[in-house]
View (tube, rainbow, N blue to C red):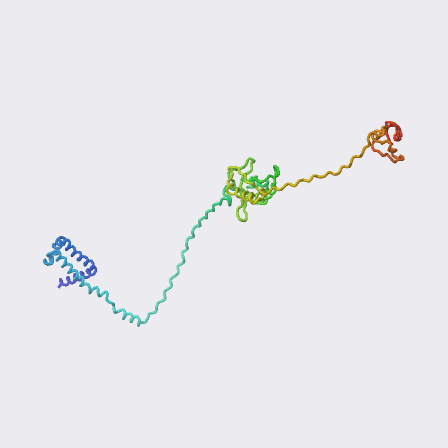
Length: 359
């Protein structure tokens, strides 16, 4: 009885395991049949093992017979497992009954969910601010070199100014341009260029940009002069060239803006014919004053008509009588001292001292 129970248990285990490995069993016995056909000696040695001694000799007499018997047994085993697997695929009739029972059951009240406490939001750490890099200065639109700031207190002429920097006054000569003179020989448009320069910088704060040289031969600081305008930075050196008051004048090595800015600005001023590039005014000739008419000189009688006795005035002979003051002629009718050196024909020397009309 015990042996029967053990056989049944063993059979159940084999069936359960065979159900899981059924595909492998089929593949294995198929391979065994092919091997008995192609390599019968291999299957023969396998069938001759002592483990298969209980198998009837007629079932393992030849390799093909052994393989066929094994395959037949395997297919029977798989066939016996089919009803077991079919139960798993049959529909369960109980769901309908359970659904009806569920529909007729009194619904239980659904408990309201207990509100969960809201957690306070975890504060996020504030990211450290990254410093914004300073923008790179744009060449020609703002100062790009070494600079200093000051206030213009005097305009010397169109290209020279006096600037107070850190409490010290310094004379600054604009780099790369030249304007007409107003001191060492007055030139045309000298006063106008000075006035244009003063209108831009006088009394204003300026930024002085250095090129290569510090000063010129006269000790003046060589600088590009920048001011802040409504539209941004304004290079005063360039603006005076653009307005036609200054001409490009280079002294290497201080030529930073000459090719990039100065030359084009001067070409535009020349093309427009403005400032010093305009036609020079024609000088107006100065009128020569007409001299006032000169009164004709008095006509003096020839010496031959003067009386020889009277020296110092020409008392003409044959013209009439000459009198002293108080005389009949209410004279004298001559000027100057008259000496009587001969016969006093006119009776002018009354006291006889040789001087006419002395009393």
